[in-house]
Length: 167
Image (cartoon, rainbow, N blue to C red):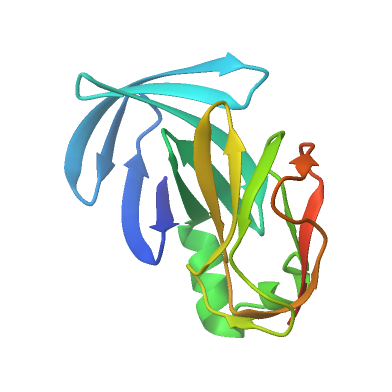
């Protein structure tokens, strides 16, 4: 099965031939050993003898990937979905989330936007400190900030709404 993985705008072709321990990424053979560590959210992957640990959470029609002090957004589709999208167009825009939610409990360090501000994909929105690390939450799509529900110094819970967007 061939999947197309988009990480921050860059596309990768991932081929899995039944055995998920051996796959190809853009034609390169990669040997994988993976484990789910905590409540199906924390993952550990050993890829070609290099260990990667990350938190995975569904978000905005894809996945937010938290690693170390960084964050990526990934979208995954298969060949059939891509062919269908090319024929009828991508209609997911209407289903996009209208809010930014806290991915984990923490403390708001900085709000980087203002009400009415236009943001584009990849712009920093809010910095949340969690587990002694600062995590910058970024825009996954162009939008206008409609409402800011937090301010620096606020404690937030997982899935608490931080921002509301107009699209």
